[in-house]
Length: 406
Image 1 (cartoon, rainbow, N blue to C red):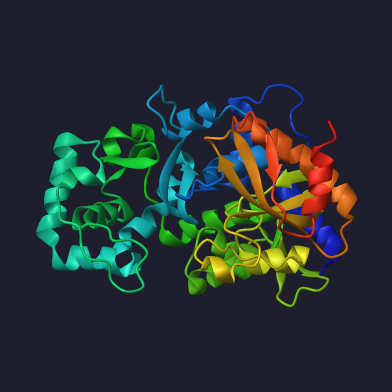
Image 2 (cartoon, rainbow, N blue to C red):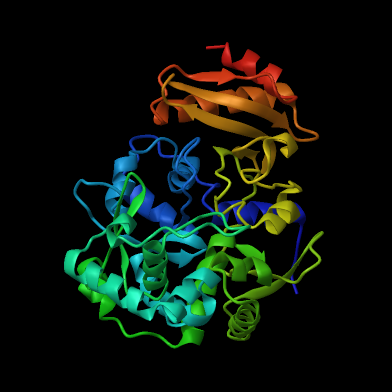
């Protein structure tokens, strides 16, 4: 069984995620976007917009400034012309997924009655007529918003993050079970419609693969995107049930599609994608969304980078350590800092609420590189007045000084 050093494994993982490639020298085109999406397999969605919608960031992190309208056309997140190449579904949480994977997620749609969230399952069990009425409304009037269902808003129960009304919950059941899909988003609000009016006929006409083959294909996508990974890493990419993940990985090993390896410092068995690149060096520089596929599985992030990362959005302000919306900063092949960012759109400023260096990082060097990346992302976001640094965090003084150097 081959052995990999921890640093070699880290470089393989970065290359698989697209960070060993140089950013395009000229304009970033739809071709670049497709290639990067093909590398990472999907884009996670999230509603928080304090800095940037998270699905835009992974492409920026790898390619640099690009026209967000190009991704909007591919995902139907605009009122403009649409060239749909992705669809929304539950993949790694709510995600944008290439159309080619739609048949391989139908097994999840078929299991909605046991896998959907409790409240979503209950609406189908307890209010089947409401679900039927909402489906009929979508068929007659789609695309529709949740507000168009006219159902009453329920009281929020203790511990629930949302107080969705029953019509919204019925739509979520229909979405999970594949009976409706997202036609588009406008101002990030989903419009629901029937799949046959949204997805290409050629995609819908494809036979539904057996569950086992679909899950193997999802593990293949994860293995290519990770380069080297443990079984829990691979299963988490598309949130496979753990028993299924173990079985599918074992089957791909038996078929010679995954190579067992040992990695220095990894306690769990690891698996190498045979086609994974093994670069001698990685010279990346990128801010990473909390929901970027490089860092979204926190145990893997800690294992590969020695970087303990927890998102603090849902932590009371007084108990936060680093801030509300904190992005790791990748430099070379290491995560060297983290910054709490806020886009102050009214003032035209990117506000650095806090900046923190990792142990062993050179503050002056990290600050200079981070300053350049912050200027770039501020320009991409249309924050024409640039970057403003608050005083919180040990890296803040060096970062503020670096930003004064033009």
